[in-house]
Length: 224
Image 1 (cartoon, helix red, strand yellow):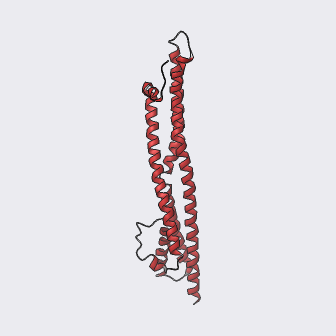
Image 2 (spheres, one colour):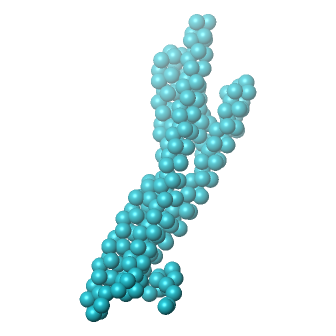
Image 3 (cartoon, one colour):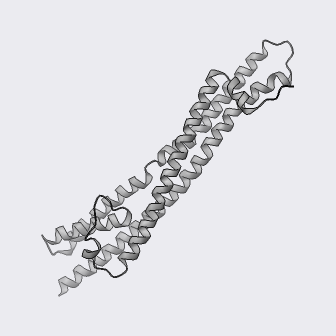
């Protein structure tokens, strides 16, 4: 009895099934590249946030904290606070009224938060798409393979398991490949979405704390 191996099924599969397998393989490669890229982004973002939070609450003056800041290199909470502080200095030169100053600062920080959200979520829709589409591609290949297997039975006088088994195995192989591609993508997507929401909540809390500091500073100076 001839042994039926994975590679033998791949090379003996129909052209259409091979095309679907290549598409799933390409999806898997793209998915893993995106997973490692996003892992690097979130690792750097977490480290940058912890470092900036430690420097911010060390008692350093804001002017000194942002003295050598490059607006094109900062990210995360540092970018949000830097954006608010820059707006604070600009508006304070025109008015001493706390209300328009704080409104401008909060608007600037909201914009920075939205941009950080876009940066953290970049690439995640691709993972979601691969994770949701891959099983359907595999299922489509399975249905196609089963139809081809049954069509081949029309050419034989006696249908036995040995005749049907290779075609059925070939058909089910695409479903297995689809799941193999989809499962890591879905797991990574859910994990990174949770990490993104956690970081964004930290950034937003940081922005609220910074607004409170500026509000107290403005109220104190106005009272003086």
